[in-house]
Length: 349
Image 1 (cartoon, rainbow, N blue to C red):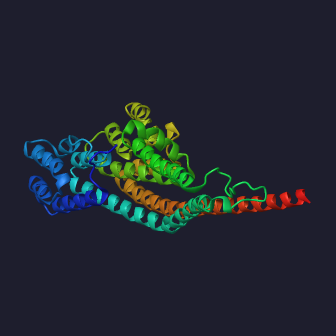
Image 2 (cartoon, one colour):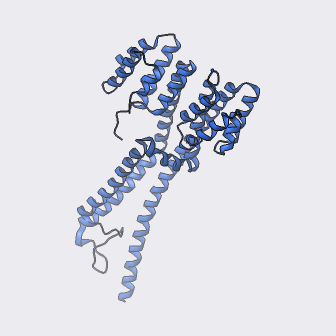
Image 3 (cartoon, rainbow, N blue to C red):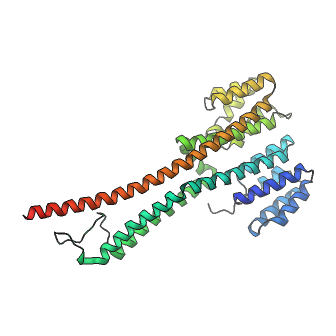
């Protein structure tokens, strides 16, 4: 939950440097020694472990897989695929593109919700100020029934009420962050969260598209090698890092081992989009499976990017809606208090 996993910007830089160096023909041991020298203090121990493992004769995928908690599972899977296919440089460059795009989308998302979040904080601050004011004015602020005024109807007034209010709001915020970190800290805990998120309209489309993009790229790479079809599809699905697709590995490999096409195996599960399966089938029939999967990978990347952009807009409107709800709540409470005061006057006549 509080692991020392490498940050996305640093990971993107690492993948870009390693991929470019390997593409230029540099030897992996030299490349990793350079990475150790460039590593920041908190990264150096893990980078040294990778470098020493490779220098000791371990494969690159074994060296990366042996570092616990430092690298995300996607990196380990992509390195394995790249090494087995003889396209390790392309795997690293692909990961660099992925994490750079992820950083860009995150910045776009945060920029989209920044102003609504400021408004939300301002609305919460106004409510806190009203709570404090009602206590600060004390007995001088009473209704016609001589009872202390409680505009909000929360039973909170003054310093004590403000402290309770701030504690509850802070507790909800911190609890949400900790719950998310706990849910994403391990694969077992993340599975139910990912399954739940995939059921949501915009978020689900983004998660599914990114998974299919990784799956398609892995097939594009592995099907160009001597690797058998069952192993290709197993690596591809694992590399997709998706809980729904991971559950289809056994039935798919069972069908493929009977000599049936991959497209038929994927279609039998009912979990994969028809356009993806159709492209896979065309690629198998024409003998251009690698090219077809490369095109589908780019297609799903673009689809995921559009979905995440839409998510940023949707989130901004959602926060605005929450701000509006706070404002409406305060207005209604003030209006009800005013109406009650009028009825109190009328009852006394």
